[in-house]
Image 1: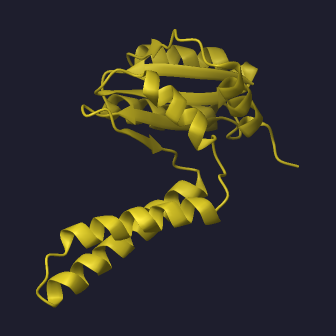
Image 2: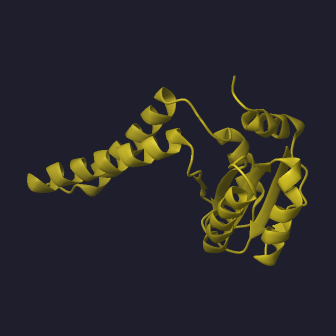
Image 3: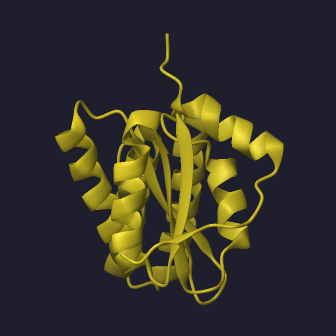
Length: 168
C-alpha cells in the first residue's frame, strides 16, 4: 500500500480529484483505495471530507438535525435561535465522534496534514495498492495536484498506514 498526499489550490479541485480517483480505482479492479479530502479554509479552520467514513457521515447528519431543530424551537418561541443552534451542533458532533468508531483515516492524522496546508488549499489523502499507484498518480498530476513535499511525523504515517490495512 502507498500513502499519497497531493495538494490543490481549492477544495473544489481536491473533491473533483477524489471523485475521479474513486472512479479510476473501481475501473482498475475492485475498490481497494481509501480517499479523503482535508481542507484549510482562509481563516485557518481545518475540515475533513471522508465519504466512506461512517463516523463522519453520522456526525454531520446528527449535528445538522440537532442544530436545525434547536434553531426552529428557539425561533418558534420568539428567541434568537442561532447561538443555541451552533452549540447544539457542536455538542452533537462531539458526542457522535465519541460514540461511533472511526472507520476511515484516523482524524488526528488528517488534522496533522491540515495544519501544514496553506490557507485556502486542500489535499487529497489516499492509501492505494502498489499496483494502482502509477495510474492514480498520473490522474492526480493530470488534475493539477502537487505532490506534498512535507515530511509526515512517523507516528502520523504509521497511523495512516494502519488504518488502510484490512480489518480482520
